Image (cartoon, rainbow, N blue to C red; front, top):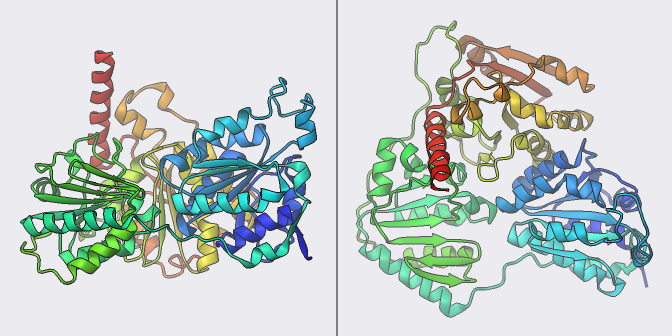
Length: 568
């Protein structure tokens, strides 16, 4: 019988589900495992600069390709990754976190090993991860090892949550039947209960028949749980006005004639706010209703006719249908509505903000309001646009995305510096899909300082992202929330354009842009529009300059914090 080492089996399985790059750092409890990666054709080890960056990179990779893998070592390595893993859990991102743990014999003897707490407890770190994982497993039995590896990979993909897989060091070279690889992991969803699904479709159809002004709102989980196509079909068949949330930006084609823009509660454009909040039926797809995603919970619907589509349940008005998955409901609903003649007259759709059509002199200093609308002219179909928590994630809502543009922003978890790691993983993924696909990062000068080392990984692999650094001399989003003059919102200024050569780049481009004329000249350059090399572009901005929505959000956040403190 032909056999394969357990370590190689893991990486062969990952390759079968589309994972070609593995993130993480070496450590003495995972080194033999990493040897096995190099035995698999088409696999590469990214070799990140620290475990937190690796977790962010894996998150960015998974948002592009559907699932990712990160490998760390026991204790010191896995704990350094947990902030990134928590973000993936919060925001529904499928990351398999593989941890090389001490051998089973060392654990049985409770040896006082390095990377432990010195108390003989080898399960404590596993228990920590269990709270931010969809499921966990530590391999202890070779006869079930392959099934456990398959189960963990499937769970990360299906549920779009992190999964923890611990493998003792003495298992990496244990033999498994290689024939197990012939049957691929089943990544299909299990069917819904037919009666519950039928009831959902019937109730939604009845609500649509009665509605005069229905609308559709698409949020983050429409992308994470792969229902963007079905959402688009629902818009087509109903002709409802359709809106994204900030976290859902890019889930609806922004050039679709029924697309109306971004709804973010009281921070919305007046015509968007009026259309959404006067609707008599709201179809909400994949909602993650966090404070920054809702204008500090300022949604103000006038109707109670709300249908919520989620990955693992449906909610229709006050009735909840546990276990009914939205993908199948959407498919059935679209089929049903294709034969229905809905009574509502398609309402007018708010017009999204067009790109700038101004005559500003070239010498005009750059401001955020102008910049984000102007960015629409630079983007092309298929781009991946990554925005950091702060001015970028709010400003991007004023940009019109071309078709098939993927927006990545960690609005819910909001870990400063996330985008600096995520851009690395997203660029690896983009290169695997299409070497011409562009990955464009916007990150503040303060946020960059948390994860700047990951630029080194991208240089090492000759990746070609656009790195736009918004230099507003500190933590502007924090200044807008509280402490505009506070010393704790200041940072040490860096010479950003020296970073690429410092990290060893020999083929690169750097630019400093401070006026609208310099921006126009750069972004209209045909050579610049092609991702032929890694580029860093420093955008010089006034300290307190920010998108209007962020300024308003900052005021709301401070009011909420003050009110909550008073109540306590």
